[in-house]
Each structure stands twice: as structure tokens, then as C-alpha cells.
Length: 98
Image 1 (cartoon, helix red, strand yellow):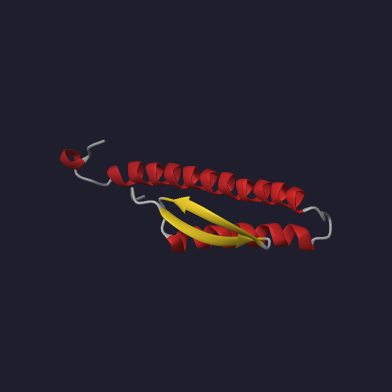
Image 2 (image 1 turned 60 degrees about the vertical axis):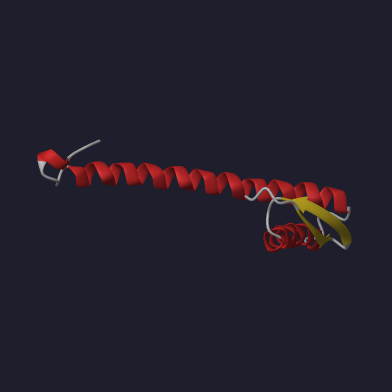
């Protein structure tokens, strides 16, 4: 991220927010649009009517997505280490560095 602060106006659930961030305005708008979509998804499910409760449930869904992505990254890293070890065995002895 850059050290330059950008001020970006976004709308989430009909409410306007002025977000000050190191991120680019495009990134900030994309994040806000994603949050807005998740909250609206919860509101449209008809299980929740109050926007603050919908925001909490959306935050839980987004956090679950984050945790799943982090878990997936760990699995990919482990698979890469395993594959690297297997490939290392095929190299000549002088090239098998850890």
C-alpha cells in the first residue's frame, strides 16, 4: 500500500460513507461494493430485517470466506513443499539444496 491517503465516497445499504485509506479509490469502491452486496444478500433472505443485524451476519460470512481462503493457502503451500521435496530427489546430488 502507498503512504498517500485517498478519500473515497462509497454507498453501503443506501448510506454514504467517506473512506480515508491507503488503498486506491478503485480498490476501496470494490471492497465497499462487495460489503454492500453481502449485506443486501442477507437482507433479501428475509431472515433479517434490521440493517445492523444484516451487517453483522454479512461480516460473519465475509470472515468465513477469509478463513477458508487462508486455509486453502496453507494447503497449497504444504502441497508445494511436498512437490518440491519430490522433485529435489530427481536432481543430481550437487544440486539438491534445501
